[in-house]
Image (tube, rainbow, N blue to C red; front, side, top):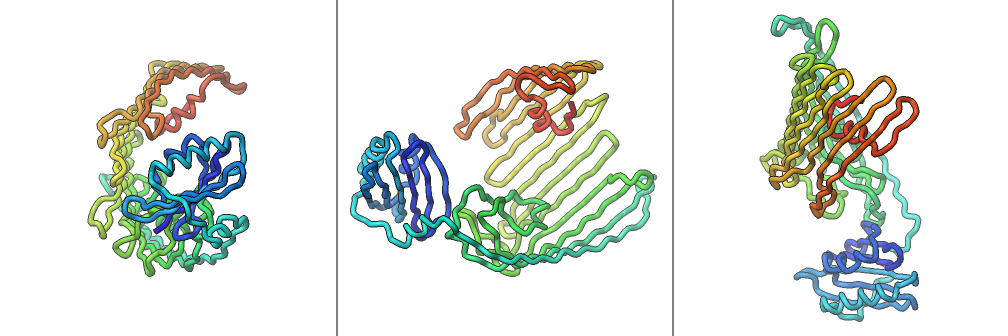
Length: 391
């Protein structure tokens, strides 16, 4: 296994990752991140060009395994200083000189017009059964909806195509019926698979509103998928996790939702989510939810909007990490609204980046209906953070 890393120590630094001699990922970093990148990657080889376009190379053994890194720099301002830094860091890590970059690797790196042609075919079929029934003294329409989705897309070697913004999509009910498990256009997944799913609903006999919905489904791999991103685990168990969802509207004001993913290969829960929402008064809402994703997060989330009178209401949200036992976000404030304008004042304490640095912000927004607004867009912040919030 080899990793080739490309750098251009100028105003911005191009980063090209190579796997087994093939380009798999492109990125951009700032020059101040060069040293950290080398130390974290521990490449077996670093190659770059200084401001005199003179190629230099170093080799090293990386933590018991061989890796490689390629870096290319051209004369941009203080390039020489960054090249000296690369030289010093590599020398400190014991990376000797003397290994040339293979010609086929350079040719691949300089390919500016990669292409891919791949057919995709799918069949989506379902049945719909219904009957009239009574439950708790009320009339309902009960449905049963089995569904079969077959997807076929042959394997194509896409390792020569760079990765810009493609990532695996979060797996859920919608993913059972998609033709690509990746976002973006850099990768098209190969597939020979069938999805088996079933949904049952209870619809109100008077107004047709959905009162209860239960769904269960799973993808069965007829052939094991071969296209993968760097670091993406191999599929296991001959298929995906079982995906189950339940939505119950207990009353016109109270609703419950449950989502569960259980994988028979690992015989464990991959995802679990529970949410309850209660609506009260005029534009009042209270949300309580729990989220779990295996090896990633376990959180509790409480949010609300509570009217005080016809013009004033309070808003708030609190997100707690059960894994790390700390507050991820705390938000609170008041809103005043009339026929012509609205004023919002919020205080927010939250973690701003992956380094767990906290930030405290005070937001003030004045909105003139139909004309515009001044200050931080707190309405969007509340809409994204509080389910059911309406201005």
